[in-house]
Every structure is written in structure tokens, then in C-alpha cells.
Image (cartoon, rainbow, N blue to C red; front, top):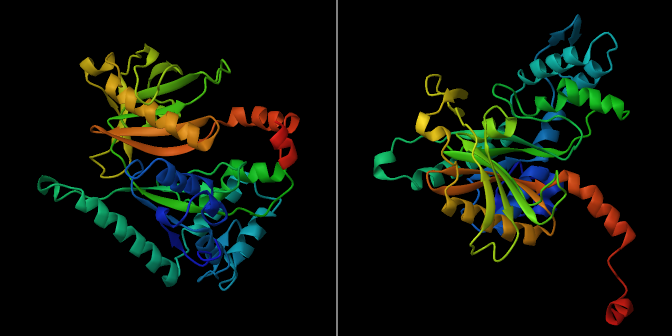
Length: 359
């Protein structure tokens, strides 16, 4: 962390979970996945660090900024302008959020940050183009912008047309900080820039059956198209429950598969050239299982290995592009953590070497 503290952009090979203070949880988990899951599971990415975020917050606005009857003089620090907006009692949280978003749209990255980001982008672009065949020589790299904050209680989301940094001041995020007695931003974290996966199949997997509180079952929801539709609940998804019996890495699997009527899917908006759109599926796709058995086996095998590596139940977002399985995110199953922490308090791990020998 000390060695990399002054970097504005980091790549997954430069560390893993220990980099949380520099890049946030989501990016650190992706880096950890690259290490414990092996190469080829995560789409190419890099992360703009917290150092870049803090530098921009401490930079000065270049022009006078006017909003809601107030003018903030140029050369005022970005963080000072934001703090002054947040303490205004005459503005609603929605108004504050909108003004701060407009402020961020006037800010340009300093050249030193811009250069590192562009260099990191060209690296994943080069990797992407090298993987394409002669027939795909005109392929273009599309990337997703994903937040990776260390702040757990705020609504932090990367939406189309919205700066991820400004997303730290959504109406809900401001409300949550007020509830916890804080008006200023104390967030640390990064911004992930990652190759978009054009998923044929997308879904979410949890290595625990949360409603049943059953550690012996894996629950998978899988639908057609991009993951946005499945994660948001905008499209129907199949539900697969896999029993943790036998060798999950080699099979055969014992499972129950419920096929949904998948009449819509989220796809890339080809007409606009960016963004996504809800599209009807072909009739023969609607009641066909989203996951073939061989795909289910591969997914469960990877999930089983990762759960063993992490040591607790995990939540995985995945996509299948053609026949290639990609993992897009991994995190602890949030509802399981309180039970885990309670168990550790009541039955702490033995630290005394004498006790360890006796046991």
C-alpha cells in the first residue's frame, strides 16, 4: 500500500484485498478474484484510485460556479464548494444532489491523472484487440464505469450519463449521512473501468439459500441478455437450487431447475450506439433453460472453489459471453455476516498456543 499510495490508476496484478484503502471494496474483491480464481475469469479492468479522487477534491474550480442564488468564486476548492452546498438549510437533499452533480460536470481531470488513466485504458484496449480474430478486426472496446467505495451506507451507483464521483452525493446518500450525523464526505475508494461483457446469459449466484438459512444449498438466478436486467429484476429469470452433495467441482450435480417465461431481455442499444434497451426474446428462447447443464457445472465448480478460498458464503454476479464464463463481482452474503460475527464472539478462535495443543 505504501509503494502504490501515489498512483492514480492501478491494475489487478498490483495487489488484492490489502488495497481496500486505496481502491475500495469492489475493486479489491475483483483483484482478489484474479488471484484466487485464476486468470481468465475476470474481464480486463483497471481502477482509478482514491488518491485521484482526493486530489480532485482538493483542486480549485476554474470558473465561478453559480447555483440556487449563490455564486462560488473560482479558485475555491472543490471540497469547500460541496461542503457549502451541503450545509444550506434552504435546499432539499434532491436540490443539493443536483447542484453537486452539475458542479462535477464542470471539473476537468488534472493532466497527471488524465495521463495515467489513458495509459491504463490503452493497455486493456490492446489486450482486447489482441484477443479478436481477423473477422473481428473492427471490434471496438466498450467499458463500464463502476464505483468502488469504502462507504457502506451510501447509495453509490454508476448510471449512464452520471459521473461516478458525483454519484457519492445522490439524494439518498446525503440523507444517510445526515441520519448518521455527518454532512461532509468521508468516503474513500476508487472507480473501476472494465471491459463490458456482451452476455448471452447473466445471473446471480449465492452459495447459501438465504430464505431457508440453508448452508447446504446454492441458489442461482439466471436470465437472458445483460446482467442489468437480472440484477434489477426487470426481466424474468430461471431459478436453480443446487444441493451441496458429492464433488461439486466434478459433478454430477443434484439440482432443481425452475424455468421462467423469459419474454424480455436487456441488450445493447445498437441504434443509439450506447446504453441498453429492453427487447423481446425469440419465442423458442422463452421457456428454454437459460443454463445448459455443462454451463451449470462450470459455474458451480468455480463458486465452490471461491467459497472455500474466501471462507464464508459469497454472492457472485456472472455473465456468459458466447461459451465463455465471466465473473463480474463477488462479495460476502450480507445477511450471513451478523450470524458469523455472533458465532465468532461466542466461540472465538483459540489464539493461545497452549490451548491449541490441548485441543
